[in-house]
Length: 329
Image (tube, rainbow, N blue to C red; front, side):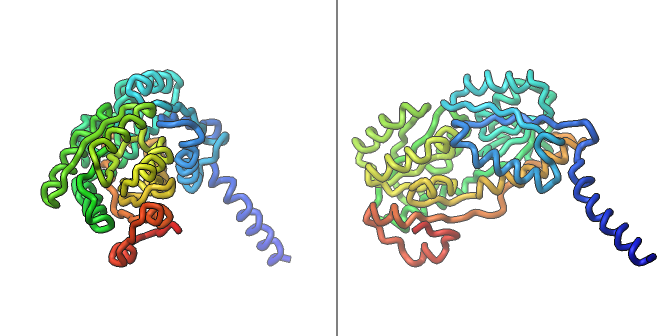
């Protein structure tokens, strides 16, 4: 009889544990997280799902102890972000999650008190978003994902898979302040590798057709797309335009290769978004963004789209294939 009572007590305890675990926030409190994203809801759906998954693993359950207030800047323009960031700041959110430099800058301009966690910001110090990576100061912290070495690696990979591809076009969004150091790093790598660069600009989705027409006129044989949230939201279209122009194209996020781009090399954006949930959790539990160091990527992955390589008539060297983290057939 005593043994039976013990078994019943253990069963009740085990059943109660998940219920208790769900109460990450104190009873009755719901943390409202503002999302500031580039692109339409359909384009950014897997980013928001990655954040939800990361938070769920930390026992945040939507409608129980966490809620989301999302805003989308489909054009990716700074003035569009500024208006949306102001809306979130006035919506009584507990924290703003921002994707990209332009979104983060708009959020910082909108509030000096609401915590801001960013992902996919290339140069947070140079963009004046944080004082330093180790001690951000203020109300902003997050994860950076760009380095000078990444620019050099993309050019090196293009030289390996398309050795005759010279000159190389570089597509940048001049409205994105971080495109300045990104372009500078790419130019340094180009001089080392003796590659001629042709810079082409696009500030909004409707300018992409003209940008690729300019690339065709100048006779570029390959393409590097500098990291930018607007470009990311238009990844399928950019990949299609690159293939149509017979350009061997390299990108920094795997989303481009999955959308039809030739290759990508860089950190896994979805993984970074999932990992940002830990930083969000710390802040919601009382930590200050000023004291949380900006995190840098520790793993870079190479993804190659073999379907696109075949369309372009490229034979990817075995020395490159063996280094790939994923090959899309």
